Amino acid sequence: MKKMLWAGLLGIVAMSSAQTPEPKRIQAIWDAAQDRIARQTDAWFKAGDYPRTVQLLRLHYSLDPTNYENGTNLGFMLENVEEYDQALAVYIQLRTTNPGEPDDAWPEANFYFKKKAYAKIPPILEPTIKDHDPHPNNYRTLAHAYEKMNMLVDSKRVWELYLSKHPDDLAAKANLDRVLKRLKDGATKK
Image (cartoon, rainbow, N blue to C red; front, top):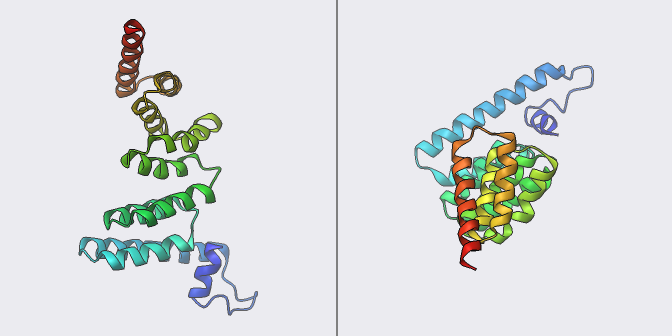
């Protein structure tokens, strides 16, 4: 789909099938266009031209709504210009467009975490840790959300699952120790 969009933009669609460039050439054109968009976005961002930055990020994301980087860049920028509802819509679209990509759920969950809407996080992140091995941030955000809601048993479960896959993460060990201490203190107070 993305190749066809760019092909149309570059006038390739008008060619007959005998004239259509080879897939390698189309990929090279697509890569060059993506690179140019990214460089222009960076230039406008550094210049403080946020309206144009958002506009170009919207275009870039619309060309490939399955692209994690494009979606998170747009969402991040929308948050920076305090367009929170629009940022959330992008994060939801990213997650629902790519249900097989576990990391695509994290930007929405992180958005809720920053807004202290902890109860919205488990339904989004639990499936990612059950069915996949996502980025560590999925585990961290989920475990911290459970702890913030005082659901310490669930927080413990998530930290233990994460540490079974990443046993050398010292920060995760410290977080698990804190949750275990809270569980123990709560049990002794009853």
